[in-house]
Amino acid sequence: MSRPVLSYAFARQHGVLALESESGVVIAHKQSAPLPALLEARRAVGRSVSREVLTPEAFEQRLSATYAQADLAGASEDALGAPQDLSALADGLPRTSDLLDSSDDAPIIRLINGVLQEAIRARASDIHIEPYEQRLSVRFRIDGTLSEALSLPARLAPALTSRVKVMSRLDIAQKRVPQDGRFSLNLGERRIDLRVSTLPSRHGERVVMRILEKDTQRMALEELGMDSDVLDGFASALSRPNGIILVTGPTGSGKTTSLYAALSRLNDGSRNILTVEDPVEYALDGIGQTQVNTAVGMSFAAGLRAILRQDPDVVMVGEIRDPETAEIAVQAALTGHLVLSTVHTNSAVASVARLRDMGVEPFLLSSTLTALVAQRLVRKLCEACKEPYSPPAVELAELGLADAGHTFYRPKGCPACSGVGYVGRLGLYEIVPMTEQLRTMIHDGATESQMSAVAFAARQTLLADGAEKVAAGLTSRDEVLRVCRTDEG
Image (tube, rainbow, N blue to C red; front, top):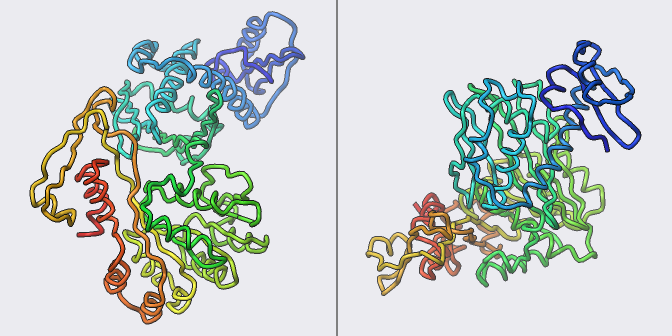
């Protein structure tokens, strides 16, 4: 593997790369590279070299690939070390007007590595780098909530963004269009994937990095926190040879985790399991996963149509978002496949209306739907500092609980939870297994409220599941109402 000899700033500014490997040193440069820069590169190497002239496009690709490898190696080493003080790292940055003018790239690399390390240590799911007129904000999303981890001078935005783009092999010269990339870090036995998205904004490019750790998603269905009724209903639906199982909820409610847990349960080697996802977030051994790519015409519908020719037993579609995908999914279920997918609705029963709105005939829905699952994620109270209190009647009524000696808990904040009062998250679930009565109602075009009355006559709603977890001291009343209020009014 080639190792860069020159600083990134010098290589980028002058169009010259000096690459050292076991076979010697190669100076790769643009045809327009100035002679003084070539002589300086030759002087820095200090021994005989070979030259390679590159086109501007080839040079940009080589530049990104070379320094991405170096940056990722440094990031992996730093992330294994002790936690770093981000404020101290920021204070140690040079005070130049443009960091790329510095001959030493180490400070900005240390800062990025420190941000990555701290985000992983804090269990963040996303890192937001947001440029504004007077400052650059770095925020972490922890347990679903954003909080600022660092505020930097606005002048650092171009350097920080360019470095992240180099690490994820994006076009650093293109700043006017959105870009998507990814890179990986090895932290001992752990493998961390980071999915990078850039977006042009008024004061520079916004960057969001999604942190994906493969091991955290290898959860069994029994570990998701479903109560026995929901778990039994879900497992029963998965045991059927065909039909459609829908998991509903807003973005970030854990739908993908639930689907992966379901696929892991089915992945016993006796079935051909194929997925179409946007994007493929976690690799599942023994399962064929296909990435949506609309730029080349690989939509959910096109991918689903293609994998149905691959002799599948189980098909997972990341999301049903258009009539064509809905129609193909229904046809797949009718022809003997078990189909798992998601839709964005506020409740389980509302997914029936969503599919009807997409043009799926009610008689097809009534014969293919197997189970509807809705879910939300709420933050868990910190066990070290949660405070008990006796709830007033109005709070009990909000959760549908009888006025009888319940004890609720609220967050306080302590060093163990970084003053937030919450650590980790847990799921709230409701399930609607298809019965003959519900199939008849779907066939006859019943309203959502009519179906809900029948579906939850003897089953828990999301709010009722949340109320149980509040009464058990696992989460707070505010958390449950935050995610369930739209459903229950």
